[in-house]
Image 1 (cartoon, rainbow, N blue to C red):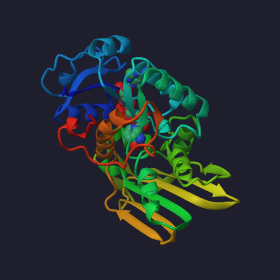
Image 2: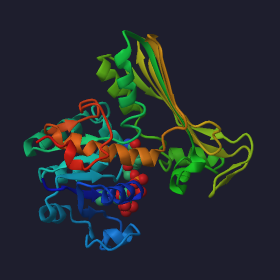
Image 3: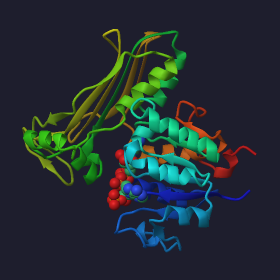
Image 4: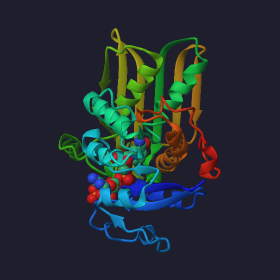
Length: 342
Ligand SMILES: NC(=O)c1ccc[n+]([C@@H]2O[C@H](COP(=O)([O-])OP(=O)(O)OC[C@H]3O[C@@H](n4cnc5c(N)ncnc54)[C@H](OP(=O)(O)O)[C@@H]3O)[C@@H](O)[C@H]2O)c1
């Protein structure tokens, strides 16, 4: 069997890590790279990644790359909202090629973008392609893992998931994205201006959990993004946060039934978090408490989620699917071809 041919679409922070990891994997061949950034287009992918020359030129012409390379799958990592990524994903699907994307909204688009989700599903089925949005969060920690843990419950009253990250251990762009080092006023201005959007995906995760349990929610309430204020000076390798300034952010979203909070997701990312963890509490019969310490690193986990999903997506039927529709997630550590259905 031939190696699985993959095109990397979007070679930014996450896409580059995915491409680098794919280049080391057996049973996979990176055959093309797409991006629009001026500093990337025209460069050799290998050299751009700090590796040896590969003879793969980063291109902004999706049609030409896909027609020439005929990949089995595209790994896509450009932006968070489906309205921005729809045309990019549609242009891949039209070639009959499967897509795994880190677009947060695509992880469960039926809540915020039902029309686009339906259109994409129809387009994918028409062209025999499978589309899945995944990543560490959304994609796993606050949805797929939660859903999996509910399997041992006979009754459930409430589900809570908390992710606490010490942003000091993350990239500078991430620290900027969460407003670290700003004054509270600057933080609020950037939130208003849309420069800081906070974490995207809490509502998608809640909708996915509710649908898996066939819970009809009265609504999903996303609370405003709040700054986490430094109580003492804290610092990362890049930023020093003085007392009273913003160390990062906290966001909560709640799934409601008859005025009762039945699903609560709590995302916290700030410089100086003493304890990093991913915790899930399912109150029910039995009550389940699960805690991962330290929390899973977002980049590492996202790269793994995307690559490990490749064989499951290639084996899946056509259409827009979500993590809830794929088989139980697992690592694909061996030659990628070993996981493919004959
Ligand atoms: N689900 C999850 O758990 C998860 C985890 C990590 C990341 N994500 C999401 O994945 C996305 C990518 O993350 P990142 O950190 O790698 O972002 P990034 O560093 O900004 O990289 C995105 C790259 O895609 C390029 N791009 C933008 N629009 C494009 C288009 N139409 N066609 C081709 N390339 C395009 C960008 O170019 P320009 O710089 O010129 O715009 C940039 O080079 C983000 O939305 C992020 O929030 C999700």
